[in-house]
Image (cartoon, rainbow, N blue to C red):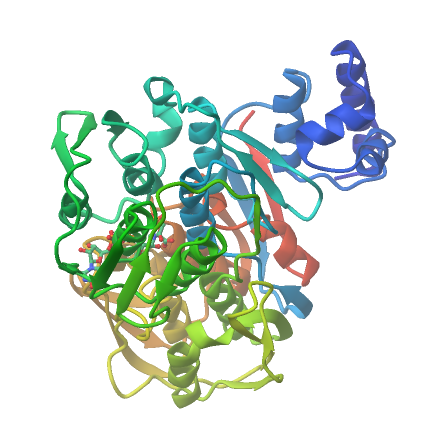
Length: 508
Ligand SMILES: CC(=O)N[C@H]1[C@@H](OP(=O)(O)OP(=O)(O)OC[C@H]2O[C@@H](n3ccc(=O)[nH]c3=O)[C@H](O)[C@@H]2O)O[C@H](CO)[C@@H](O)[C@@H]1O
Ligand SMILES: C=C(OP(=O)(O)O)C(=O)O
């Protein structure tokens, strides 16, 4: 952005703010930033991302700075070598679980350093429509959530709800708040059929009965039904475990959940529930014992841990660009298998001593990557529920395998579509063969060359393409990147701080 451009935008923002009769402080509050930051913006002294400009446009309800509402695209110039340090942000998946969990509490919840991503924004819109007050407190993305006395369940923002799968996690907390309610169908990444039956089965012992119509789930609750025996989940899913946990949190008895996921977001939710006064035993294992309470009304402060998937994305960025960078605040306990696999492929790196995340539990390290000559692993790479290789980290092995010498087989048994999207790497010069909808064979090394691709409707495969574009020679364009913004905060800007050359633009 040229300097003159920043001055002009600054003046436009100042005029629009005055026109609305707002002080700099009031605008800062709407943006969740400081008055001094607004002052810098208005004086043209602050670099502004397109996302920030769009947010200011919304806050001021001003067409002048709304800059068109079309999709955001990225133009990447490569090849890039990255350098410097980057911190991992907190996870999308704990963020959304905790937003749903906050509905259990009648008191004020403050969540520290929440990732400011579109998935969170959609849920905040849904919560707002139910009458929940939410507010960004500062530049560090601390978020305050205050539920109303009575939730306005009939007013739910359907459009926002349909864009996220996470609304399914309203079922667990809401079944204690209403006898009957309706939720729109859950959205999220288009990864093929994602069943909701395990959620229904897990919540039936709490009296929940759901009838699905064309566009909605209609829920009815029989409060006299309580779990008589342990709840055995039919699959070890993350959000289904979270739903069962939240239902158990407000059931004033002991619930045992078997075949529970022990993944990172589930652990963050358990630590939060403990702060709410709920007893949770077995955190990190597949049997959770929860002793709930009838009423939760406490002011609580919780700091979710860092995102292992963002950490893996940054590792992949360093590997494919053969760069030396330091990735700080890596939740190592949720990346151990990934790193062990990378080690067998010849990846060289150094790790610091471990230290605790702000939640006081999760073990973190700083990782320094070194440019490495990788070879394909002997065995196929496939994911498993934690403590296996994370299902969301598997796609990153596609772009890593593409730069390794030899043939790598990836087996995504979990999702019906995700492996298919990885074949988009062929457009950048990758040698990727789809063996069947779940298995891809990738042969490297690849010399990527730039091209134009539209993001597939899935977060991780889209980021994989972005990373290949960083390594690709020439200019690439990645179109319609909302799907990436669903799960990553300012990814392009943060990679640029490491030396990447990524420009965002819209069709105005
Ligand atoms: C908001 C959130 O936290 N989203 C995560 C969560 O979604 P979520 O918990 O919604 O995942 P799903 O319930 O859709 O499970 C993913 C797929 O795995 C299958 N499955 C899962 C577990 C199992 O033991 N057996 C089995 O077959 C399911 O049938 C489904 O097809 O978990 C997924 C799997 O870790 C992650 O990709 C998502 O990022
Ligand atoms: C599949 C994912 O997310 P969601 O469950 O939000 O669709 C993901 O995070 O990769």
